Length: 278
Image (cartoon, rainbow, N blue to C red; front, top):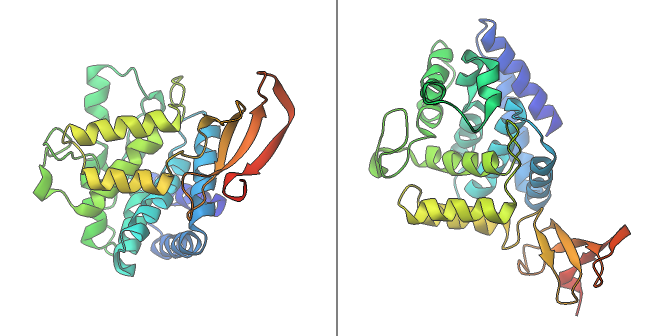
């Protein structure tokens, strides 16, 4: 993950200074992410979710990598072929490249934008396409992911207000994951939403017809019934933080107990795999 974040930073900084995209470096990063995510799906999801909890600012490069990993996990779960996974990962890594053309303080601001700032920010998909216009190595699906990842099924998205049948399916995956990552991290002074609340917001948007409900449900399935980072109460009365998922037993994650039955915080939290307990 660290290597991927550094690679994305180098690629973005190169584009910002007028160089063409380093296509071989990008391809290497994409293939490494696909290999790691395919081989260690649960571990990669755990890593991304824990990093979301730790991120205290809108780190553009880390955001792009984490969106790429989560999009890949959803894509693998949906049974996408290798070519689609490569396009999905590449598009996700580059989906916010247009933000390098915007004022840095606006990109970092997060919530609380004025209407003028929000309008300017909504240009970033088009700015991303313009930044990559001279890159011949990128196929059309990647451009569509960059341009359409903020489109919503009911036409209320941006920049083109496309409706359901006109939105590229891979862009829909990136859009759903992008919003989850945005909600799950602290931005511009706004605290991160708890994982369960972020999932709830996504599901409400699906019920309103803005996202594909089956896609949101698939993301929730990948995150687990109790997403990593969730605070849960056990039937013993103890409080615990969800640390890892058990794919074979999604109702019984691995947790770290942080508070005992009497409400006393534990000086040495205890890790417990609920799938191995009676």
